[in-house]
Amino acid sequence: MSPTLSKITKELLAAYGRYPRKKLGQHFLVDPGVLKRIINAGELSKDDLVIEIGSGLGVVTSELAKHVYHLIAIEIDSELLRISKEVLKTFDNISFVPNDILKTDLKELIMGRRYKIIGNLPYYITAPIVEKILVTDEKPELAVLMVQKEVAERMAASPGSKKYGSFSIFVQYYAEVAINSFVSKSSFYPWPEVGSAVIVLKPYKTPKYKVKDEKRFFDIVHAAFQQRRKKIRNPLKEYNLEDAGIDLNRRAETLSIEEFAQLSNY
Ligand code: SAH
Image (cartoon, rainbow, N blue to C red; front, side, top):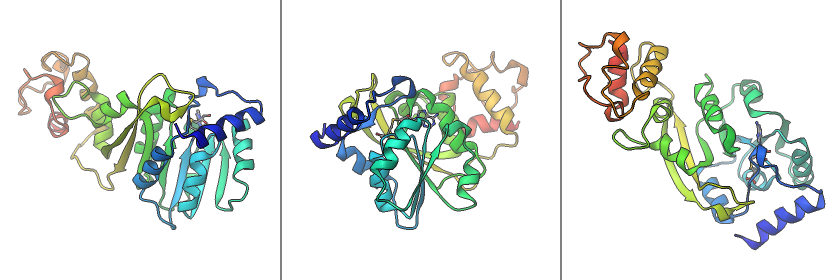
């Protein structure tokens, strides 16, 4: 898209004899407009600590580092990390963590400080990454994530919509969700097979929904959505919810998070 960014990316890869590894979800951002949107969505300031997930060749990293106090770049591909270290050597506010984000102890990295998370995610592990971000007890102030368009729509979906399901409820239980913008395939090199979107998650500092037993709540949500277009009475039979104050002839996709909370608290 941008002749410069995509040229730089291709030249860097060529110089180091590297090809993007699809298995690792390596689709490098080459669109400066999208980069700007990510930076803006992060509401960055000079006292921010940011963790970047999947820093790749360091294109997003360098832009982020200009706007924040400190940046921690986590990247699983040690060769890419080596290249990005070279590219970013003039920065003194970046630390590099050669690790799998799913195996990284975030607490150890942040040491009690407030922080933000930003990343053009490897799509093959979007759900576990989102889960990790939202369920940790030291949650980020916000997360700006590039994800598959379909996944973004599921995260942000409201009751009654086709995309609304247990993943929507999981994410919205923990965080305010907003789709920042949709991103076309041509904004990446190489092009991904799917459309993308930038999503912003703002985890709630205190729980938004009154749920007495989270395990029971999520069990009920999952059970109800096993047959999303059928009455919830059958899949929820074992929970004895006849008198919980919700019409059990309704379908799972019509129930709000409050209503699922009401069912699970009964
Ligand atoms: N931030 C770069 C690269 C994004 S592509 C850019 O926007 O151009 C996704 C990146 O995540 C790749 O660099 C890939 O190697 C990395 N990655 C894949 N799996 C990972 C994992 N489990 N932990 C950390 N990084 C991972």
